[in-house]
Image (cartoon, rainbow, N blue to C red; front, top):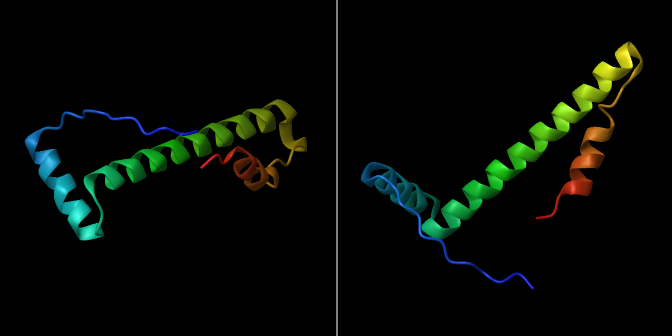
Length: 81
């Protein structure tokens, strides 16, 4: 079971105001805006780790490896959202 957790976030006034305007423009709450932002950062981090891992494999194999085909499959396998 995924229980929701409460988090207190301290933001400088200017950043808070920009986030509030963005949430209004997107038609969502600040809570949803921050959730979406964190999910995006997590996905970017995961993609970068996969790219780095596949690059390391390619570098270790020299010109003989072709791991590009596996990137999408690995991404789908690791997608836990």
